[in-house]
Each structure stands twice: as C-alpha cells, then as structure tokens.
Amino acid sequence: MKKRLTGAISLTLIAGLLVTGCASTQTSTPAETTSAGDTIKVGILHSLSGTMAISEVSVKDAEMMAIDEINASGGVLGKKIKPIIEDGASDWPTFAEKAKKLLQQDKVATVFGGWTSASRKAMLPVFEENNGLLWYPVQYEGMEASPNIFYTGAAPNQQIVPAVDWLFKNKGKKFFLLGSDYVFPRTANKIIKAQVKALGGEVLAEEYTPLGHTDYSTIINKIKASKPDIVFNTLNGDSNVAFFKQLKDAGITSKDLTTLSVSVAEEEVRGIGAANMAGHLVSWNYYQTTNTPENAQFVKNYKAKYGVDRVTDDPIEAAYDAVYLWAATAEKAGSTDVDKVKEAAKGIEFKAPEGLVKIEGENQHLWKPVRIGEVTADGQIKEIWSTESTVKPDPYLKSYDWAKGLSN
Image 1 (cartoon, rainbow, N blue to C red):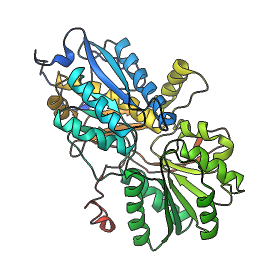
Image 2 (cartoon, helix red, strand yellow):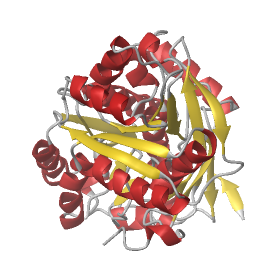
Image 3 (spheres, rainbow, N blue to C red):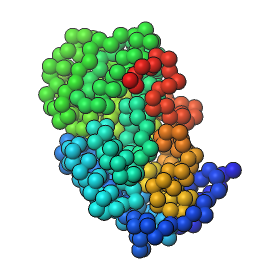
C-alpha cells in the first residue's frame, strides 16, 4: 500500500512525497550526534572552483533550495537542516579529504555531492570506511553499486544505451567517440563499443583529452577525415565550450554532423553559447522544458530564487530530488542513522520534476524516464524522444547479452 508522507515535510511544495509501506515508529537514539539539538547537519560537497565549477555550482544551488524549502515547512524529524558546504575544487584527492572532514569532524548525517566519476570514486572508500551516506546526483558509467551511495542520476541503461539505440535507428551506424580522459568517458565508451558492435555498426575512432583541455583543432580535423555519422561526446566541464565553439569555427554545424552529448545540459549550453549548440543532441532524464506540473513549479521557484536568467537541468533536478528523497527516508525511518535510512529507502517514490521516480532497493539507484533532446536557438532543449515509462536501473547491464564481461 502507498501512504502519503505526513509530518515535518509539507506536501504543498513542488512535489508530493510518496512512501511505499507504512511509516516506521523508530526514533532517534542519543548516540546519533548528527541530529543532536535543534538541527541536523548535512554536507554539500561540489566543485565550486576549477574546471568543473561550470556544472557543479548550480547543483549546489539546487540542494540549498531544497534544504530551504524543507526547513520552511518544518524541517526533518522536527529539526532544521544545517548545511555545511565544502569545495572539492575539481580535484579528486580534495573530494576525499573534504568527505572525511564532513563525516569525522562535522559528523554530518549525510552528504550531497560530486559530479565526475573520478570525484565519486575518490569519495567512495571514505564513505564505506566511515559508514557515511553520499547522494550522488549525476549520470555515470555504471559498473558500481556501493551500499553507502544513493545514485539519483542515470545508470548507463537509462542514458547511454538508449541513446546509442536511438542514434543507430535514426542517424547512422558510424561512430566517432570523444571524451575527457578519466573513468566515466573511458568506461562509457567501452559500453558503447560493445553495443555498436552488437548492432552491426562501426566505431571509427576513440579520442581522449585531459579535463580542461581547450585545443580541439587536431581532433576536429580527424573528425572531418573519418566522416562519421555521429560524434558521441563524453567531454566534461569547460572543455565542451572549446570543442563546440571550434567545431562551429571550422564550419561544422548540426546540419553537417550529428553530435550527441551526455554531459552537456542547459547549464553547460549557457557557457558554450546556444548559437554554438543549436541542433546538437543530448541524452538525459529531465529538461527544463519537461512537461509536468511539478516541473513548472520547480522552474518557477528556481528562477525566483536565483534569477530569471538561470536555467535548470538534469543534474540540478537530480540533486534537488536527492535532498527530498533523503528527507523522506529519514522521516520514514524516524532517524538519521545511516543503516536505518538505507533500509527505509527501499521502494520510496517521489513526484520529481522529471516525473515519478522510485528508489530501487537492490542497488540504490532510481527508476527514471529517458529523454533525448535537441538544443534550440534559445538555449533550451526540446524533447524529441522518450521512453513510455520509467526504466529500472541496471548499473551492471546484466539484462544485455552484449554487455557480458564489461564489469570485469
């Protein structure tokens, strides 16, 4: 049976919280120092400086907005949430160091943070060794399911795999793979190569550049020479600004070449320039233009808080969802204790701006819709395809015969 969550969190906000199962009668214990007194401390850990700040600052803003909304409605377990903000500075050892500080010194109840898989991989052992809890808001390459992480972005079968299928059916069979040189693009491209091979297509080239790289003239010449049907782009951070500007300067537009990006959303389009991105494709689970009542209110509130020129996007929305999902699990558990929260989280649903999402208890990922979009001249993204319903998360791609052995 499904019961609407009652108590400290008001359901008059952007989206209702739907909890599967009855609310627990467990209560906090004196040992739970994270929720001692009148506040519950939580950590926010993103790159507020460096190459990834172009993406992560707005994710931090979304988490702060959710916290402010929840506090205005009475908080969690009758207490106000107190955020402690740290800067990962686009440096993976710094993420690990700051995560340790938040857990050991600040004794936060949970942490909302990260963007790149390199930052998540750096933090993962810290959370596992300290039995902390991280809510990670960005799509990623899969092949992971830590008991100390909730993944509110897409697993590969909720973004990369359906994008390749759609491209193969609608845009061509010859792929050029371009990515930043770290774990997400390399693992994503490993998946793409296996899938394209199984489909009977061809990967013409696979190129990587360091994060923050800004000279793409050589790679653009390789793209011209190889004549792919599709460039599948897994560049991250402000390298995308350089690539798309230089692609346009080379006389290549979306009419000449299909590119599909999985780390470029509305926020990145602002930095790249809509004129440089118009007509190019992206694959996500949410866009600012997503047509739900919850999203209309979410976008209105975000712009009212941060400015009419600001945009929402998929990681911003997934980060916002994460705060509400944690609040719902803590309310259901009657506690901020990590083990109790994890147990309470199984099957919890949330009316998110992207649509109804649900925590899959087996792997702590979300059931999510998949949407392919086209960047428009005004910097927005127009949905051109979507799944009919939410997709069960399959981080290890166990349901695909062609993916056997990829997780080794």
